[in-house]
Length: 88
Image (cartoon, rainbow, N blue to C red; front, side):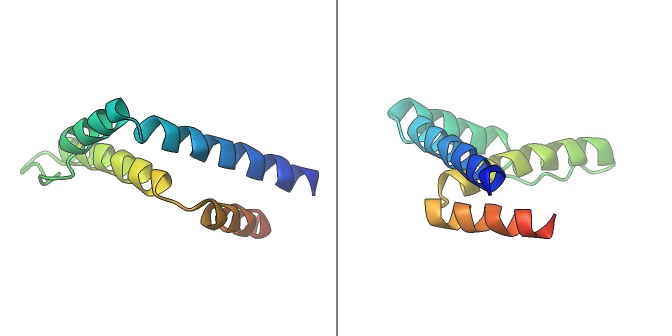
């Protein structure tokens, strides 16, 4: 049970750090730039270049992951980690 507690505490602390970071004025500017550069507003597909398309999609995926994590509720986060541990 200590393992679960430690994982939850680390995850919640990480989440709090993301929220603190991206809820500042500077953090909002950075997140906005990440969204622009990370293909949130334009297609990731590059005709004839599957490697470039994959790279663009990877960038997009990272930005989506950050957005999802920043906007996640602590309770939802705890439930998610508990489910992950049960599946191991």
